[in-house]
Image (cartoon, rainbow, N blue to C red):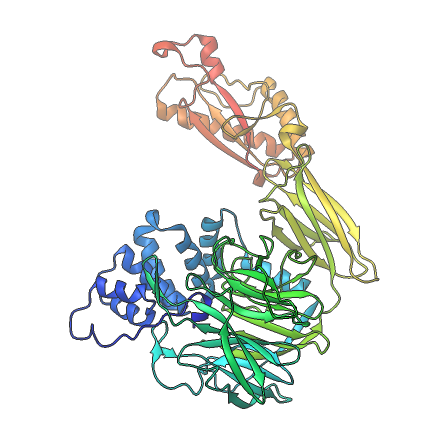
Length: 626
C-alpha cells in the first residue's frame, strides 16, 4: 500500500453519505481532499472521465500502490489530455509504470519529466554488479497482510509499527486500521516472536510508528499523528509529530511532543545515532529541497534539542527522502524516489564526510530494491545483519537480511568530453569490447557525462566512445590480479568540424562536407571525370573516418517538369552513392535523396536563369548524419 506515514495522516470518518444518491465529481473531490482515497476512487470510477477525474483517480490508486489501476487511469489521462497534464503527474505515471515492471514505457515517460534519458534496468544491473555486498532475505512473518514496517533496534529485541491486533475505526487513506507500536524478539529463522504491543500511554487512537531508543533504552522517540486538523491548501490534514517517552520503574511515562513538531508540517521517522547525541529525521518543513527532506539535530546532555539542519542537495531532492538510519560506522541509509533507482522508493547509502556533508548516494542494488517501495533499512554493521520494509508483496512487510561480500569486481569508469571545449557530452554511447573485438556491454551516458563498466581480472579490454558528428575515441587497458581496479578514463572525442577544414556546422545544426561542386550534363546522371575527382576526396575522407555516415543530396535546375526533375535528382544521388560503394565504402554508411528543383542554390527572377546559373543548381551536397 502507499504508506500514510509518507506525508500526512488524515482523520476522517466517511459514512454512507454518498451511498443513497448518485455519485458526483464534487463528492469524489470532497473525499480526495481529505485523502480518503479508497472511497474517492470508487466515486471517480462512476462519473464521466474528465481531466480532473482521471488525474485524481490515478493518484488515488498511486498513493495506495495499486499500480495497475493507477496506470489504467493515467494512460487514459495522457491519451486524452496529454498537452495540458501537469509536470508532476509525469513523475507519478512513470513510477506507476515501473511498479508494473513496464520499465521501457516508464523510462520514456520519465525522460519527458527529467529532460534526459534513463535506462532503469541497465542502471539497476550496474548498481547490483558494482555493489560491494549482496543480501540474503527472509520475510519476518508468514502473514503478508499485517502491514508491518518502521522497524528499529530495541536492546536485544526490535520495535516496529503495524496494523495487527487493531480494532475500531479505519482511516480513509486506505481503509485499514490505525497503526500501533509493538516489540518482538527475532528467532534464528528471522521470524517475529513474542509480539507485544506497547502500553496505552504510547498506543492511542491515533497512528503511532517509527520508534527509536537511546543507548540505555530509557528514552523512546516515536511518531504520532496530530490531534488537530488544519487546512493546508484545499486539504484538511493532521500532521505527523515526534513524541518522547521515558522508561521509569518498569513502565513508559511522560509522552510529550518535541519542540520541532508542528501543526503546519510533519516531522517523521526519527533515528538516533549510536551515542544518542544526534537525531536524524524526515520533514516537509519550509526551506527544504522539496517534498520530504532529511534533517539532523543535536541533543545536548540535558536532552535539549538544537536547531535542525537540512542535509543539503547531495542527499535531498525535490521528491521524497525518508526513513534515515545512521550506522555505527557513520554511514547514512535512507529511502528515496528522487535519486535514480528501480522506481518508487529505493534504499541508498552515503558515507558521512562532515556534520551535514555526505558522499553522493549509492543505490544498494536489486537484491534490496525492486519496482515497489523498499525502505526503512537498518543494520548492525558488526554482525552484517539487519532489517528493512517493502511492499513488494502488496502490503508492507518486514524482512531480515544477512549482508555478504559481493564477488570481486573490477571497475572501470570515466567521462566523455568534447576534446576542444572539454564540455561533458551527455547522450554519448560508450562500448566495452574484449581483446577479440567482441562487444561486451554498452551504456548511454547520462547528464553527468560519466560511464561505468565491470570487468574481470587478468584480461585486456578496449573502450570506445561514440557521439553523433564526433570522431570516436578509444582506450585500451588491462586488469590486474590485485584487488579492485579503478580506471579513470577521460574519453575526449573530437568533432568532425573541428578536425577537418572542409567540414562545417551550419547555423541550423546540419554538418556538411564542403567539396567542389559536382556538375551533371543536361538530362544526365553519369559521373563525369571532374565529378570522380571530387568524389575521390570524399572516398578518402570516409576511409579516414570509418564510423562516419553521410547522406548524398542531389539537385536539378528548374527546366523540365518537377516530377521529371525529382526522378532525375534521385538517379544522380544514387549514381554518386554507387561510385562510393564501388570504391570501397560500405553501403550501410550511405544514403541518398533527390530534391529535384525544390532547393535551388540560385533563385532566378521569374525563373529566367542563365546557363551558368542552371549549371550551378545541378549539384550534389554531402551531409554528415552520424
